[in-house]
Image (cartoon, rainbow, N blue to C red; front, side, top):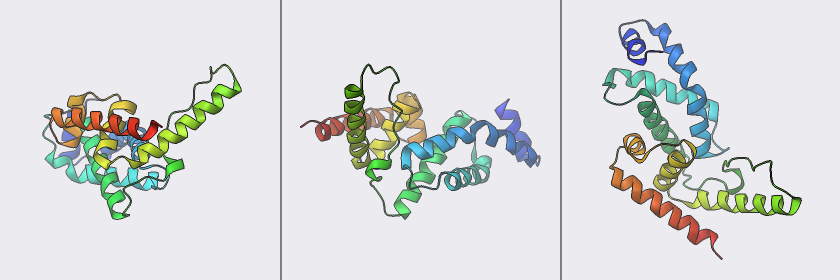
Length: 177
C-alpha cells in the first residue's frame, strides 16, 4: 500500500480508502493498547478511538515521518489520556501483559520459577511512571529505535535514552531483594 497515495485520496474525499489504513494497522494498535494498559482497558474501544483520532488528525499529517510513527503517537496519547481519565497510573499487577514463556524450558521447576519471575516483572512494570513504561514498552515489545520512540513520544532521543535507563534501573531496584 502506498500510504501517501492512500492518505491523499482520503483527504480529497475518497474516505472508503480509510479502511485500508485500519486493516493495515488495527492489530498493531490493539497490541500496543494492550501492552501499555493491560486488561482493564477496553482494547476494542481504545483501538476504535485511536482510528477516530487518526482520521481527524490526517489533515495535519505532513509526510515528514512514517504513518506508523504518527499512528503510534496517537495510540500512546489516547491510552495515556484514558489511563489518566480513569485515574490509574499503575496497571493492575496480575493483568499487565507479558510475553508467553518459552516452550523449551527443560523442567517444571524452571517453569514455575520463570512464571514467578514474570509475575514479579508484571507487578514492577505496573509501578513504573507512564513515560518510562511507554518508552520501555515501545523499545522492548515493538522493537522501536530510540529515534522512533522520540518521534512517537515527541521528545528528544536523549530523553528516551534516559527514560529507558531509569525504567531499567527502577525495575532492577524493585526486583532485587
